[in-house]
Image (cartoon, rainbow, N blue to C red; front, side, top):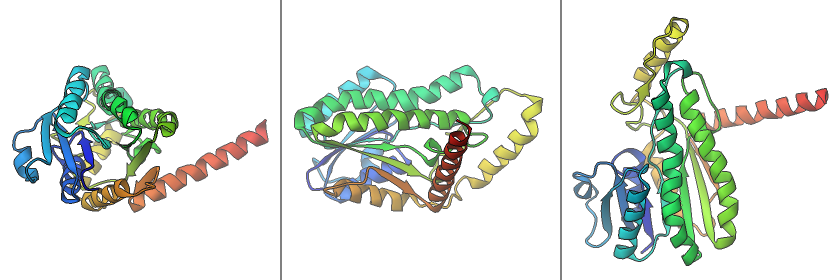
Length: 272
């Protein structure tokens, strides 16, 4: 890990902040990016010369290129890119206005693509690198109230599944992370958006879902500290995993989805 350079999006809080902290503790150099960076350097408290804090809106291609260039000017290389910045647009599909749906994809999918497009040329020149993509178990399984959020993560999964095969011959590896429900501020009302179009047919279900989110916020079963440590360990490995599901809920939901798909495949074969 010593002297590896990490480039992390969404490092201002949550899992991204923990990853920046733990990578620094492991001896790496870190480029910590976030839309808001006030006080971030002080909170990370890194040894001199090991941390570069940069403002970055991942939906801004020019800003992504500028952040990449600043990272290369400071550290000379990028070994680990963590596409972590994300947005939670929750609610029943018809209750979410068009701009909310489009912004969900701008951040979760196109933002990750924009940052990868800025960094991958450097990794190609190096013939080495690790692209860590923070997805979700909801990139594999979708539920009522999460259709728009999940659709952005499903798209992220499809992009990374193909991209991983494109970059592997160039020495660049890929790790997709699928956490279950994490005790971060992701569900906090200041961050997670709810649909605001009132539709009587959905009112009871939406009220129940909002109550569930309020109750779950801050009480999620999975520890982000443990996940951060696991990702840093995988990034230090000579052969990191290609996918990492984290949390009993993630494992149970993903296994149930696989069983459902297998049953549907068998049923389709019987009809053919």
